[in-house]
Structures are given as structure tokens and as C-alpha cells.
Length: 243
Length: 150
Image (tube, rainbow over all chains, first blue to last red; front, side, top):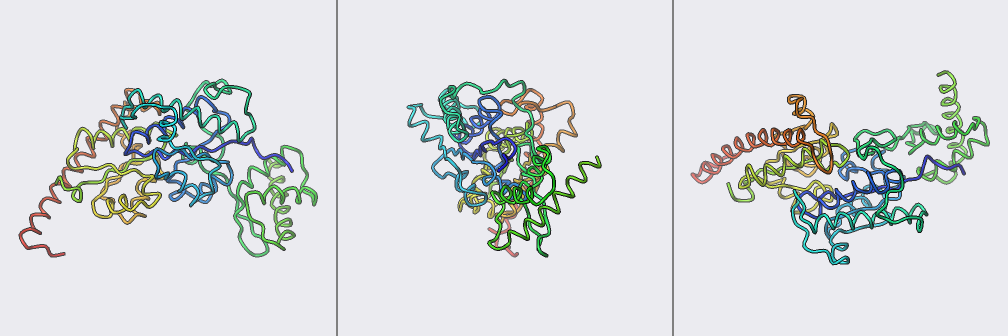
């Protein structure tokens, strides 16, 4: 099976505006996304699971996701599981604070010293989890960036609607008379095309195997899906050649 | 209007991808902590996403002002989906278009332009809160005088 575009880990912060620990989740997530693991992570605004589109709701199916919550209500973890997919890991700031013996976190608008310590500790914890999920453990310290970062606020790749990096591209395809939404199909076809795969029966089977990671293929419908994917991929290749 | 049920709910964006999200939060904090602490209450968007009973009850019982950081308008959508009434929706981008001198930069820490933009926005929201406070106060008076028709 062909690799999908570079594997990354999703980081979803609760962002809880009412409490200081919510501010810690935001700043810790930003530290991971912009400094510690910029090339390995993406994020999405939690509300987009409801307010966004189908591509947003597939976020946790597409990316192994680390939910970062400020308190035991665990809104980010629960909402991610409820609306997108079960998070790969869950981090709760209040737990990190207790485990590290950090003092009382205060100041939702301006964090106190304990709050800044909590940001650093939480970010390091997230970075370690990212490494675990990407199989990069043991190579470097969690508090060290894995890649040089020139602009920590750079935009994320993908069909980004909100700059949080949301918006996994989807494509609607008619399969046996029914419209089916294929998650990440545009990305998959781009990669197949870049790999020089011709639109033939063999490629169509490879496409099906890759596509079904993100989109359910009903039992007994494989032939219809394969045929539809071949048709769409052939059209895609034709468009690419024309341009 | 110090009763919680008569406060105006302020619901900012949760975004961490753009400075505009940070501006929305900073403006919200300025309103609820500095400008109109007795008349407003902050509601976390994540609580509405999870359907938290208290958060839903708060936006259902009180008028809400939303402050969105991008065109997806998550705050406005979530308040409405939670059964709340959005009396005024602000978009940071709209405010920025009227105050081009205050270009916000920085997400974890806003630059001076972003802070000024947040302040201008907070002042605008405060005006809306004042209007609502007057309206709610007169409604309360009418109700207490027995004229509480719907």
C-alpha cells in the first residue's frame, strides 16, 4: 500500500476560555505546533467538529489525535470521540500540574509563573506522545524542536478553511448510483499521480486499499467502488495532463 | 443586572490558528474583567460543543454576544445550536477592516496592534451590552409592575 501524504499527529486543545488551565492548553498546543514538532503536527478548532464540514469531522480518523484538556470535564477528548474519532491519547493539564508538582495555575488572561511552567510541561508531554505515535521515540528530547522553524505561525498544508489546519479534502463520487463522500481522495490521487501510477486495474485496487482506510467500503461493494475509483482517477490524470 | 440570569453571555472564538482568534478572546476578557464585569459572563465554546448543561442553560436564558475570529463563525453557530439567542455577532475581521492601522500579529502573544484592535472591539461590545442592560432592566421593571405580558 502506498503511503499517504506525510503522516502527522493532530492536536486538539479544549481552549477553555473560562479557566487558566484552558489558556495552558492553547499555549501548550501552540508550542508543539509552532516550535517543538512543527513538521509532525496539525490542529483543528474543537467547535469545527460541529460547525464545520465533513472534512473537519473526519479529522481524528485521518490523524491520530491527542486531545488536550484543561480540566477533568475533558471536553476536547469527549467531543473529539463523539463527533470525529477516538483520540489516540488524552492529556489533562490539571493532571500534568499535579504529577509535576507545579503550583497553582492562575490567570486565564495572563498566566502566572506556575501557568507558564504548566505550558512547558504540557507541551513536552504532548511532544513525547507525538513521537510515540510517529515511532520517533528515543531520538531527541521532548523539549527540543525536531526541525528548524522560521515562522511558528505559518499556515498548514491541505485544504485549509480556518487556519487551524482543518479541512481534510473530500470528494463526492457516484458509486453504483449512490453519491459517496471519499475522505482524503484528492490527496490520495495526487500521491498516486506523483508516483507515476497509471489509471489501470492494478492501480484501482491499490486505490481501493488506500481509500478504505478513511472511508468505509461496504462488503460486496468492492467491485463497484474499484470501478468508480478507476473512473475518477483516470479523469484526474487526464486533467493533470491537460494542465 | 447583577443576577446571573440577567447577564449578557460573551462567547469568543476558540481558534488558535490565527491572531484574529486571540483578538476575539482578548476582547472578551477585557469586557468581562474590565469593562462590564457586573453585566457579562464568559462562556467557553468547548462547553457548548460538549453540550454542557450549565453552559447551554446560560446561553438559553440570557442574550449572547458572539465574537468570531473567522468566517466559519463557530461561536455564533454553536450558540444558536445550543438554543441560545445571539443578539449581536461580531467578526474580528470586520472590525479590522474599519481599523486597518491595528494589524494583529502573534497568536500566543498579541502585538500592540492586536491589543489595540481587541480594545476597540471590546468597546464596541460594551456599547451593545449597555443597550441590552437598559432593555433588560426596563423589562424587569415592567414584569415587577405586573405588566409581564409576552
